[in-house]
Amino acid sequence: MTGLGQYQFSLASKIRQIVILAAFFIVIAYLLGMRVLALGVITGVPVSIINFYLVMDAIKAKDDAKGAQIFFMKRFFYRTLISFAALFLSLIGGVQFMLGVALSLSLQVFTHILDGIGLILSGKG
Image (cartoon, rainbow, N blue to C red; front, side, top):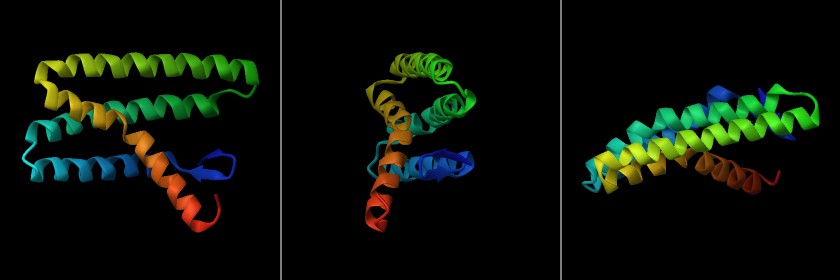
């Protein structure tokens, strides 16, 4: 379990949320006839999961504040480079494919927004 204050979750459950949300976007894109966008989401999910792992591993890795901040910033920088590289390479597939990859790279943020909404609705937030 990883905890940020009272906000506790397991790495596996957060990755499961990312995959479920990706499946939702894939189905919607496919039903709207945007198969290339759906393929972009599929392609971007592994990158999104790797990016999420990089940040979560950095959060729990260090005990001292200064070392943790430096380690976290390095990991965040690597995450940003990976995301930019994925977006740049996705241009090969066209704009719709790139938008699918970009959507996929945002899945972690969407899961945190949904968690926040859940906390507010439960009266804990």
